[in-house]
Image: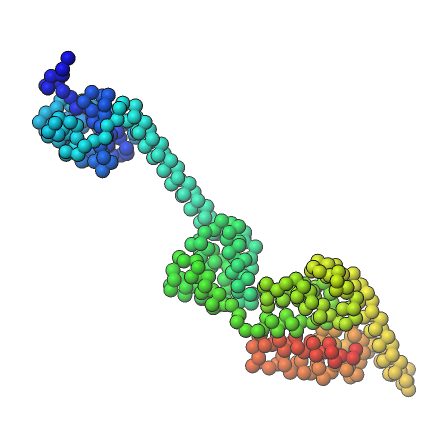
Length: 396
């Protein structure tokens, strides 16, 4: 039986997407075959004719929860026919053809998919906010959590910035946050550099910040090389000497091979100690440190024996032709270590200061220390060279 024209209805599927946001999800004449509007025309505000109908306004007010929906039927009048039907009486919108869906279930699935998508987006936003808060919290704790000393221009700048990046990676701090974290680890003039860069570069582009840091703070001279090559063993722990010299070698040449570091460490030892080390078996730093630890006891014993015999011979020479009172004064003198030798790094050397054979070198050292024109790096070099010279010239 054919449907009379006056009984024809246009069914509208309305979905609530948010506060005061409603969509026309589909149009139908029989609730079985539905037509979907293009996404740019789904907002109910695009359908002024529908909004003019009291039935539609009542349905909109009745939809309460988000993604709730209503199917409303309207008698087709001239306004609806002109807006939603073409000349051949096919459903359309402003003469635009519409995509057909076979059943109402497809509209429901689409609605559910949209709802799931909205929920997923909300969860993503929540996670992003939590991550953002986590990053902010972590930035306040980096100074405690990072295994890194503050940069004071004394360290190797290239190695320091690499360690900083590794710590950022370990604590999952991204590039932009690295710039904020960096300020916690700068001291002295490097703080001024940071403040200047904030004005010049801004708190973005980590690569540009890193490049600026390396240009400003990387040492391009030969000071570190001289320190590494001139550092010699003068006394004390052999293991401590080896570890200190290895650090200096790495500061001078980060990619130096293990054998080159071992060779430089051994060459800085006295010939007697060098002869005790087997070059073929010492192929790693661990093996070198182990062998040096074994030799430390014998080195200390030899030094004590040499010091004792030297003091005994000096005593004997000084006692010749002396009265008992003079011998007593000389013995008391030998009970106190020589302050000149002690200031030069050799402790527990007992002999009269008037007869100290390092007197001239002691005087030279203190003249150098009083020279205010020498800068810090040059002072370090002079001190090291003096120690080397003392080691070669000392007769004690």
